[in-house]
Image (tube, rainbow, N blue to C red; front, side, top):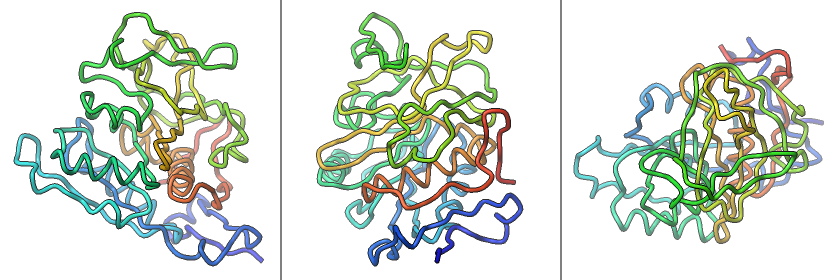
Length: 298
């Protein structure tokens, strides 16, 4: 017997159905995980993408989701203090002004003490001067990041390289579809995924820098010089241990069309479940992209 989750009428159009095997299910698995999405500021269109992110969690009965929206850029941030401890996992779609000091301390304690955290795309641009946040995300870009921020990490000959030479932190070429290559097929988030799959049009982040401590690279993509990329295999999906907390970092998800990729949705939901619980019960949808064909939710 199988229990079917993450199904709504709109999703039948692309057969986007996640399955939860009864052999994996426990009483604890039947209790929805509480998700908090953070937004309110971003150099990307968060007013469009946050509702999309929210809808994916709403379509899956593994999650209950709420949103905390900060004051606008250059406004008083003192009132922004979400109750992180009320949630199993926090998903950041935020890139903007620094949070109040107490909010930073609250968030550090939340993750360090076992809370789950998911950083989506430009969330890794945030807070270049907040050391603990940079420990959480492993790698980041822009906002003055350079060699002082940590090594430039990429993949070569099947292994990560930590490059300490001088250089900027963060860049990307032209938006395009690109292959995402699995680097750790045994990690719960990645189990069952193809060796390579074609991601929809997106920004391919490269030259990211950071502490990169307690970090494991799950997937990479080749930043093709023909698309103004670095010419290296760059980290796309990562997990980081921060204290007792688990962090899933996806560099994917620049815009609404990028987030509609079934590969993005799948890894987002599986990554969020893993960050919250340390395991993954969500199986792959039948329309997951292949190495030759991308797949998007309409």
